[in-house]
Image 1 (cartoon, rainbow, N blue to C red):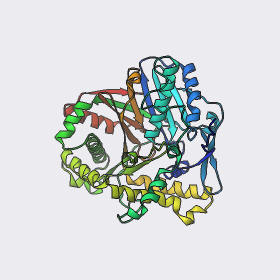
Image 2 (image 1 turned 90 degrees about the horizontal axis):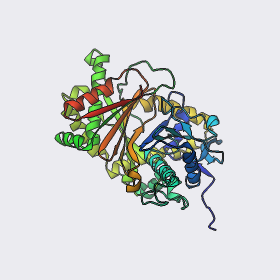
Image 3 (image 1 turned 60 degrees about the vertical axis):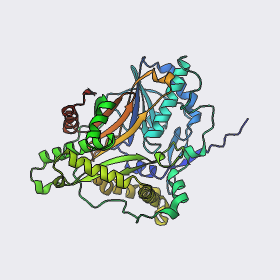
Image 4 (image 1 turned 90 degrees about the vertical axis):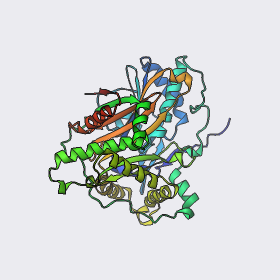
Length: 432
């Protein structure tokens, strides 16, 4: 028998180091991927499916441990749980109540969901994990073959590429090619952030707009933009309108900005199942734009300038600077976490007004596709942004989900109304 060479402990990847320092009851750092199935979920078969795949994802089935200088992950051999879904998703995961695991598999009626600590992975890794779980579940039910193309095989040993730090790998390969002048990790602009009272802890209101891919393609093309660029423009227009209603004096209006994650796997073919995403932050001065076309033009120019090989390399260098800092390296982890948490919650979170996270097109093998009706993605709640958006495309529809920690529905209401005005039919669903 081939010896399993997968390690029993893992360093946090370069992006993950920030999340243990940030995590709190308000800033849970837990995001969600959910599939709606044709049939009601059977929890007995679901738990068995989770047990069957656990050995394939050793880098997710871990405890978060505290070392002298850094946090690290260690193999968790405890019993696995599955959980009935709750009205308010992306709640804080308490390891002691979850047998030490940093993710939860949830179910309700026809919904199968994964809620996972961002320190483990990003949207891509979470989606591939949930697809593998769904495949195994459907296989146990006799609905699909044991193996399907495009689904990770549980008979294979995890590859090193899946759990190594992809940022460090790319940096080491290309550090001599970094031509862009090193940027500051944090901006200096004062960005507008939504002013509203937070709801009680644990409340997270979700509104999902469902609309046709063809409809939004047609409208985006009219504005000479991609779908992501156009929806980002609408999102920023909504924030500009909200600022105008909350800050009466125009001279006091601040710039608005969106944090948009970028899947670096689209630029480097590394089969990474941990975090391998960067963030670009298009920023708009409300005084410089007169209409939606102006906003869209600025975003398309920004994305064209920033989604380049050289600029991505400079961001990777920025990302790796924390891990490679020789002074920070030998500071005890408790002090380090205080420092990282403070920087993240002040200088870091002050750079943007909201988040638009696009998981892209989700595809299944044809045998599984007939069993899945919808796919949704939801970013973690944030006390700073107060309203964030997760975007995903499945079959012929786009699912645009806003998560709010506040009562004010201005952002999603304005955006979906604008889509309707532009000829896009929108169906609304909510957990309220």
